[in-house]
Length: 88
Image 1 (tube, rainbow, N blue to C red):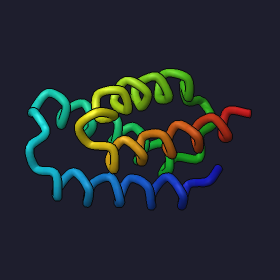
Image 2 (image 1 turned 90 degrees about the horizontal axis):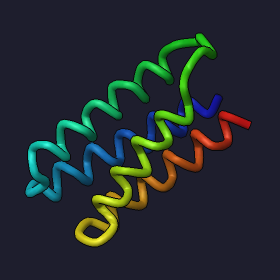
Image 3 (image 1 turned 90 degrees about the vertical axis):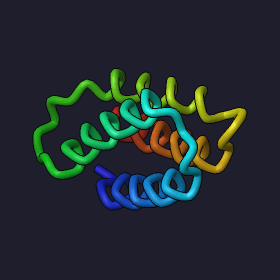
């Protein structure tokens, strides 16, 4: 699994969201929940993950960020791509 790639994307996303600063609390909470799940995924050697559910969450967030925060949206797209490759 490309764990290091996911970890790097998560760090870049965190930094980008700190720079944005004006994301509403509900969206920020949803991003943090996805981050926790992805962090557990990268820390856990267990292959019993619902990658499709993680991809759907990332896609939902990608849609929220597309218009207002295109830089952050790019990280969601990359996370989705990595999860898709993991699920092959």
